[in-house]
Image 1 (cartoon, rainbow, N blue to C red):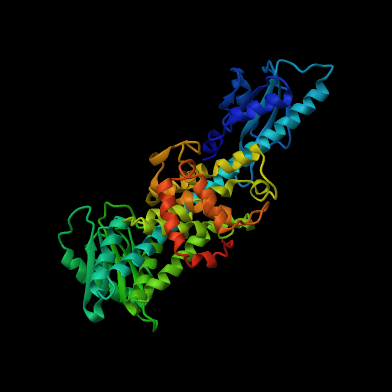
Image 2: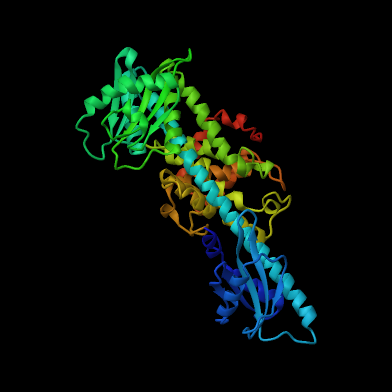
Length: 501
């Protein structure tokens, strides 16, 4: 993991910065903990130095001179220390010799430059670790979000069809989690509804279902806790699923009067991976939602609220950095979904997540740039330009966001091909990205920023029409114009300024 962090760094950029700072070409090298060269300008021949530094294996505070026998170049070195992880490697400046007349000043200048480079590299590693950590958490949270979203959709599609909604929901869960059997068991009502996504046939499925309604249910009812049976030699198998090697995850469904009257059971063949803590959380989520569903069909509203709250948590880390953008993601999401519905798109889930998480890549942008109270310089704007690609880097690790990520990655592309990050043109830009771009542009114009107040709806629409076919898709603009022509209520809810005509 540590080498991965260093190998992801653009050392050529640091080389160029060092050359400019020194006013000449500087021999610059980077080594990992083992002394292996990760970067060396002009074939410095610094392998011997790398091995010496690896043997030292110490964490140096500030640039140091290296004076060792067998080293034919003068050298300054600085260790790369990441808090919480220790030594990542070492950066080195090499010279045939330092000019005796100017050595103290030259060494001080190069040492200062080397310290700055080391700090910059460590910061980049820290950002990469933060993004990797966010991607991991996002992956776990997305599984819960996706399952909750599926429950919401099934309720909407099967209101009034109690058995059908359970059957459809279980089938969706089996396929989504790649589980051989998912069952809802309620022995008191003689109910056993199940769905399968079999990796191979279960010949004794009837006996398995009987076991679920018998000893397994009584065990969970008594313990009131989720149970996981992975190991073949688990002592509980003497009482539950005797002579059956299946892996089992069972979660209690607790009623409003605090009784366990049913179970959600996930079952896999022995050759499949063990049920994990993440699977356990998902089973608990499903059991909780089934409990709510069995009590009332008001689940639609509660699920929507749950979705919104959980999604808001994911973007809070971004919008908390800049008070002027608070609510931006939710507004862009709302407008994007309005456009998607007006276009009668069949599946809105990818648009839903792509729009909501389109700015998650801003988590790595320095606060000084993101919250600057005046217009950005060109150099500062380059930080902003990388956020779609950073959004992609975070979201692409989540399997079920692989299609949604296109909207987030390409929402800054321009219809005439002059946008970023890839300069896509026209319909080569993913449809969801073109939708998000219109919503994002509208909200950016009508919302206040640190350096200006939000502008009116009329100004925003005039500007959107002005860039039609250049920055934005003209077809989607026409659809958006029809949406706003009927004076939708969100114009007031979002406190958008109006001008008298």
